[in-house]
Image (cartoon, rainbow, N blue to C red; front, side):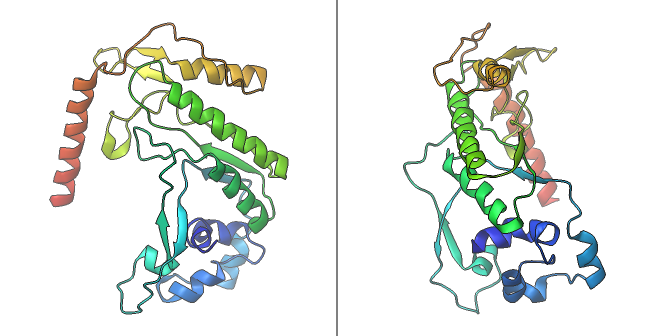
Length: 251
């Protein structure tokens, strides 16, 4: 709860809490480093959003940090007083994301209880996988997370919508084009950047059309592209991205 309040609550509390302003525990721990809201600002910001937008990908375990020496330099981990870890049984992916569907239900219920169950949209949820159009891992990911979302709806969470990340393979920060989050494969070796629907595109289309999750539905894509396709092109692009970022930060 403490980490949620100091991370998500940092932004959500002034808008969605009953009293507004930063979480009290945040003011107690790092008040000297927080900008101060006036009473007028608190009243103006509180309740100013039409809905709660939440990006959710993965989760971590938390435990009490035994090293609470006040002489330690400021850091987020020191401020929260907790350490984070992961369960080795959680499935890894091609990106930084570990597959933790239960975290979706957990955070949605936390928002419901902490902020009076505001109308909420999942504004991003997805996973980076290997290249190619036969992306079973993405299918498994969205099926599992959507089932967790359904559990949260059963708990009473006021979830209005779910936006999957993302439509097509895109530029992913320092990973460049090497991590594939899209429902559509993009041929970066083609000057036309040709798009091909992956298996996950057909599965997600079926979920939207039928309004149900069928774990057995695995239609093959119209074009089978192996996971090694365009690897050299993407590595070259990624190298250029990393070189540019290194140059930017050094100079």
